[in-house]
Amino acid sequence: MGALAAVLLAPAGWLVTDRLESRNDFCNACHIEPGRPLHERIRHDFDARPPADLAAAHAHAGNRERDDGAFRCIDCHGGVGLVGRARVKVLAAKDAFWWAAGRFEEPREMRWPLRDEDCTKCHGSFSAPAADAGGAAPFHAIPIHNVDFEVRCVACHAAHETGVDPQAHFMDASRLRPLCARCHPEYSEGGS
Image 1 (cartoon, rainbow, N blue to C red):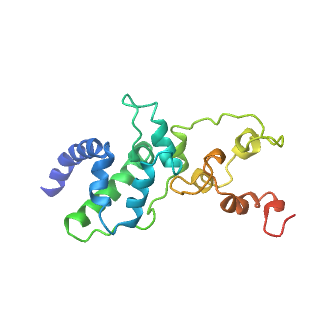
Image 2 (image 1 turned 180 degrees about the vertical axis):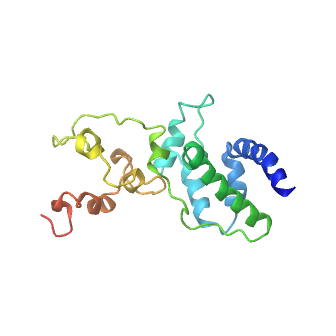
């Protein structure tokens, strides 16, 4: 009987939670409470103008894919495809269970980090802007950089880090140098 109820209620639960997740304030109702450091800071930065981080820059620019133009947390954190979406739904169900049981603990870091497909669903192709003042081609304009180096998009473009230069696409050079040094020894600590 329980299995039958689960089979019948699962699609309804999926649709209801899709609707609820479409509003940042729904998610923040549980994630943002006094003493919940991760999401409280993230929401503050997300709403900041001028944008304080890459996520806020997305929110400020809006979502051209949506009729209302709003950019929501779930647009990045929703998972891609059936498997990605199910992964997020399972985590949300687990969080909801522990919240209802009075034992929910706000995570201090992402349990399931963003994957490249979470970014490439909107950023499917990388435009090649002009070379910088020193004549160097931008990273994605160099074909070899667009192969799989096992470096996720968020390894370079940190969505929720403040204090990085918006003109540098919210990338932090100190985080990038070790990644670049894999192929370019001149970027290593001891490199020239």
